[in-house]
Amino acid sequence: MVLAHCWRVNPGPGNSGNVAIFAGPPVGVLGRSTLTDPFQQLQSALDLLDEQFSSPEPFTLRGCTHCYGEKDFEVLSGPVDLVPDDLVVATLLEVPSHWSDFAGLFRRMTPRILRAAVMEELHVFPDVLATRILEAGWQQWPAPQRDAVTGLWHAWLRAILHRYPSSVPASAALEVIAAVTGTLKPWLDIWSDTLTPAADRHLADLVDRWNSEWGMEDLRLGAMDEFHATPELTAWLQGAVWNRLGRTQQDELSRMWRILAESAANGRGRQALPDHVRVAVPQRSSPPLSSSRLRS
Image 1 (cartoon, one colour):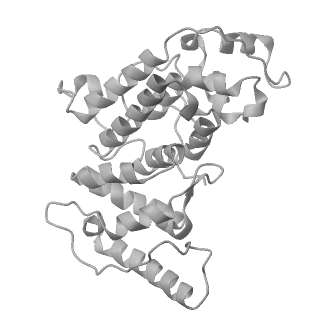
Image 2 (image 1 turned 90 degrees about the horizontal axis):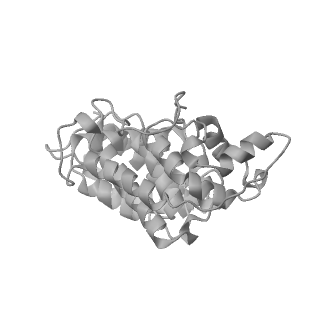
Image 3 (image 1 turned 180 degrees about the vertical axis):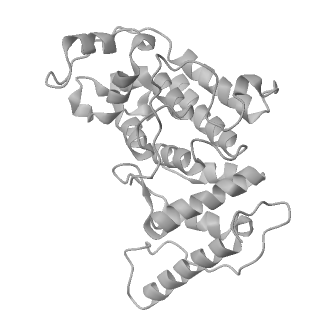
C-alpha cells in the first residue's frame, strides 16, 4: 500500500547533522539536555545506530551491469560515508535481485538510510522502505544491531508525537514501524500514553489519511501488504483513544463500523474484516478538556 508521503532527497553530500524532522529549531538548539527529552532520545538513538553499525567488514558487491558500472559497485563496496545519496536511494528503489548481496548491502547502509528517513531526506515511499527492511532480514542481524534499530523506532515515534506539525507524518513513520515489526500494539500503546496536543493532532491526521483516503476497513501496510493493520487499529480506535477523536471523525468511523457489522450479519462483506475482528460501535462522546481536537 502506498501512502501519499515520501521523503525528499538531500542534494548535499552525506547525511550527518542534527535531527531536523520537525518544524521549529533542530535538536541541537532546543535547549534540552536530559535523556527524558524525546528529541534528545532520538538523537541518542541515531548515534547508537551509527555506533552499532560502524565496524568495518570486508564487502564486495556486484549487480546489474545494465544499470550500474564498475565504479558504482566499487563505491558501494567501500566506506559507507562516501556513498553518494543517489546510490543510497538506489539500494531501496532497486529490487533485491539487482544486487549480488542485497541483505549485506542494506545492512551496512542502514544508518544512512534510517537517518535520512528520520531527517526527511529520503525519496522513498514508507511502504517501500518497510518492505526493503524486511527483505534485508533485519530480524536475523546481530542482537546489538537489532536492538539499536528497535530503539530508533521507539525514539522516532515518541519524538514525532511531541511536535506538530512534523515534516514526517506520524502515520508515515508508523507504517514503516508496524510493517517492519509485524505489530501495531506496542506503538499504539506509546501513542495512548502520549497525552499531548501534538499527539492528538497527529491522531486526527492518521484517521483522515488511513480511513478517508485508503479505507481503514481493510488496511494493509508494506509494499507487498505484509501487515494487516485493521484488527489492532480497530481495537485501539474503539477503546484507548476514542475520546481523543473529534466528533466528525467519531461519526465517520461509527458509520463505517456499523455498515461492516450489518454487512457481516447479512452474510455480505466478509472480505472487509476477518471474523475474529470485533466490530463494536462505541457511543459518541466528547474528548476530555485536556485533549486537543482537530475536528469539530
